[in-house]
Image (cartoon, rainbow over all chains, first blue to last red; front, side):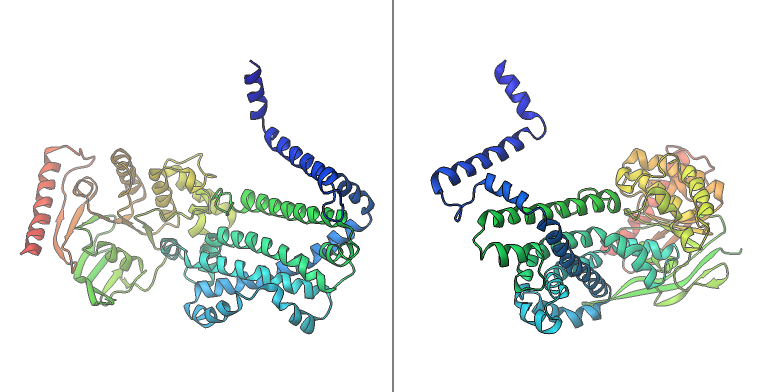
Length: 264
Length: 255
């Protein structure tokens, strides 16, 4: 009886998840309070929780600034990545012309671009955006390219027979809708990479605000580790929300015709 | 006799890495208005190539294809085509698939929706307008493909083994529906198949092809009155004739 009840309870949505989360926080609290006993090495969860209240004035501005950097980078990455990916996927010659260049540039870690970001753009929001751009552009480009290459020839033939002859129309009416799932996957992967670059991009002092700036340039030098952890969690949560919002928007609206194809 | 469509000595060679491959060799056939012509032949005999040439998706290496007295150049909405495999645009609903050709003719939205709905009803899919292709069965998809091909009102309908990948029962049902649509819309149909049964059930006339290079070996009218019975004596007799022509061809190739 009791066992059955317990099983029923555990089967309910979210029960196991919440329990495991609570247990993890509890263990963390125990270890921090009774084992480590040094908040400079491992701040306890309740200290982190309290830190949020002390930071209420700072957090909104930091989030907005970071989202601005992120938006600049992702926006530019999407525009350039999708445009170049489309051209390379559709025109063989463009592919041959650009492929080698891209293969050389692609493996360079985005953070290695920081010196040139500063020299070319200066210490501005756009410089941080540029680093994010380097992180986002390649996944978007490669995925868009793949989508365009995979366009089924039958769809092209079917469109042609129905009177769609101009190449621009074939791209707009067949290749782009066909490639949307690929483009969406590229953007998702790019968003992940871009968000990682963001923290480091704010390290070199492009602004007086920003989650990465605050974490690396203010809290860490002052050894405020509870605040560092508070911002780490904030960075994770925002990325999670961004990804969920994007997935909801894309999968429910744009890709209704192909459920669950965007990489999980 | 005036021909709706005339294929005059059409040859098509493809360049491959091992040299040239002749897919069609001086193929000729004429199709009368409102006629249902089946082209039958073994796999790889170039019947799909021929259909692609008529559709304007490829150009003949030599020879001419004449439609309504004019030589063909490129694809055009005056020829509808139903493909072998599923060619519906998966990102468009049934309705939007059928309106695709009409959109390209710059028809007003209301008008094209009205026409598309008529054709969707004609193929028996009323109620599925807003479904996506992945929600449909194989037979339903091909029905949509037919609706999409005839919605822009082509004067000739080209069909490339359209029922090749559906089960036998669905195939029979689709054949009957196609005949109904044909009788109602008075289209000229060129239908490629490798099924003898299908040809005998559907066609006014059947053109038998050889393989590699594809040439016409026999073109015969099927005078069995409609509606036809699949198991009637006449149908069986014609089937036997057709099989004989095809096997003659096979033995020739083997020699």
